[in-house]
Image: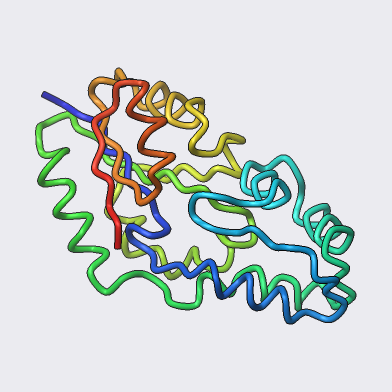
Length: 195
């Protein structure tokens, strides 16, 4: 029976380190000491809004300056924001896509996509490094482009409907418990990966 395989990018195929961005931001000129919540399960609303495409890159930088007091250049903010991506794809990323497709999307008519919570700056920073896995899937859905962000059920429904499947035909592979729990309430099958 055909199925829709939805694979997360960061934490599943791409080695991300939230602490690198937190640390880099706390070292920016002008930082006012306000707590920076930035992790796989919990993030400040300014980061969520940017991932969801609710604010432009310029508006994001302005919001960061307002909240955290940064007095540095746009380039310095961008470098700190993208520090999370320094490691790149996991060495086994392509093998992992092959394993997942073999396990969940091997029947004729099956489709494999990537669904990533990602901002414009992060995507531009890692796009070329992600090509080896992007080329292995049928489509890539980015939260800032589709204006929906996991764990909002609307993000999963957007992809499922766009691909022409029912939720019961879909499988989500994700490292976030919140994303997995949300998808499960819609009837998706889940593989929760913890690296």
